[in-house]
Length: 372
Image 1: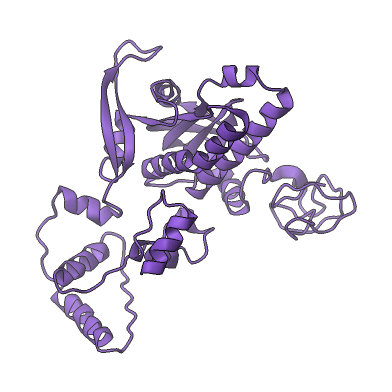
Image 2 (image 1 turned 90 degrees about the vertical axis):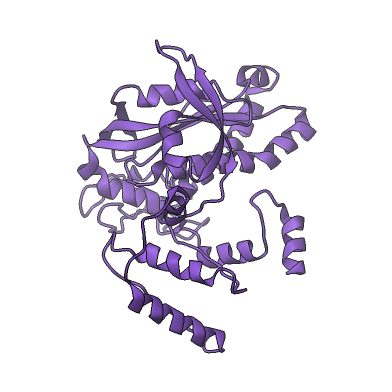
């Protein structure tokens, strides 16, 4: 019997998964327990095998199924990601089918981990790659930034895998990734999370087309995605390029790496902020708390208020006033896609303090941490 949490196959009469310990036969709709081997929930009639969590994390599967009825037929702004193996036909030609399957299975595991880590959902497998969406059916207002982050992390995570295949089998195994942002219509969402997304215009089609512009190991985005993310990443313009199926050329950009901006307020500051007026009382309270902390009395400050009231700007102005004072400032922010990562803010602070980069290997990380 497959586990609804991790996808592991268990004995027919098992009550709990011997891989992750999750109860078997739990209904994804009402969470009622059912006898081993049940195909439908005895409490509400839901299909027990509805959760495709063999590759979808439990929290993401629950979120998609919970919103299924509400998003069906909606127009959504999303970012579409296509990834495939460069020269896959030539690679598969020299391998046994079982070897090819094993390589792609390991590759898919890497892709799924990174896509799910940034809140994306896999819409379909294409044999030698995947199609994923960010912003639907689970909405993210920064879907483009999440998608580009996932693409860069995929290429970085594939590094060790590629080197191992080159050493063991002499294979040049690299992936290309293309992204485009735009509107789609959310179609039917079934009990197994299979979702049909009908593109309004050519949102999905264009993402598949720009994929062919990417070099092996590279990431290419359209102008639509570039406009939404240019503050957070560095890009190299490919100019106007012709793509199959389109009469007019499209503007495309190669993603070169991460930019210096990490937050929205930093992105806004890079474009120029309006004059900061008022909030003297709030700034005074923050200054007093800082003085107390500097004298050895630890402080915790909570800033609350409605969206758009200026909380981030207040913190930004306070930190700007500390510039040049010799104060060490460590920042970290929580995001929806970090829910599955315990202590993420603390990990982020430690990594920034030790100047640990995303490309640093374990030995390099240890060296940097030791010197701090």
